[in-house]
Length: 72
Image (tube, rainbow, N blue to C red):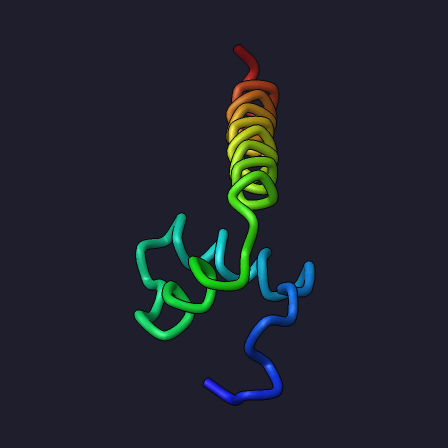
C-alpha cells in the first residue's frame, strides 16, 4: 500500500466496490486489509444493509414482473 494512501479514509466508490466484491465473494486480500485498516465498520454495515435491501427489492420486482407477464 502506498504511504500517501495510508491513513486516508476510503472513498464512497472504494467502499461500494468492497461491499459488492464481498457480496460476490471475490474480495482481494489487499482490499480486505485496506478496508480493515482505513474503513469504518459503521459505513460498511450501512452499505451492506442497503445493498441487501436493494437486492431483495430487485428480486421481488423481477418475480412480480414475471408473474404479471405469465398472467398469474
